[in-house]
Length: 167
Image (cartoon, one colour):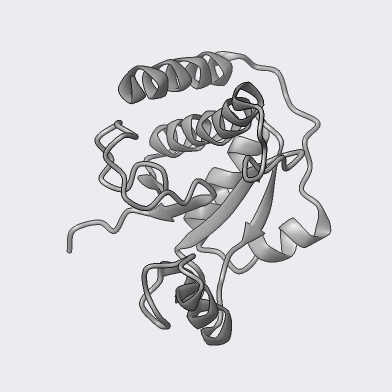
């Protein structure tokens, strides 16, 4: 089921990319500040994705205190300085569809699924935009990039990172 959902999302995103309509979406000052801490390739993918869908940039670069706190709380799998968020400029970013509607705590299963789906929809657009720009982006809902969501052990649906090119 996961593969089919991602395929539909990517097809929908590709259809939107073919349209010539310009968007009115604009990042907030806070989102701009977070984006400014990111690698130029991530900034390019974000700017082009914003023409298609509205979202917020929740985090770019992450310092030692925050990284180690996230690790302690189980929100990150690595300590400082081993996250791509710890690079400067950051090679990882957190994005959320705008308006941000978190699925956590939602009791109604249909509403909860809709809220999760918004994150996967955003991911389809971001990954497709990156692909069109020649920039490989990994999504925190598909760490191994096999287009399946049922084999993940750590979902970080806000997380995107640049795929390191072989040296």
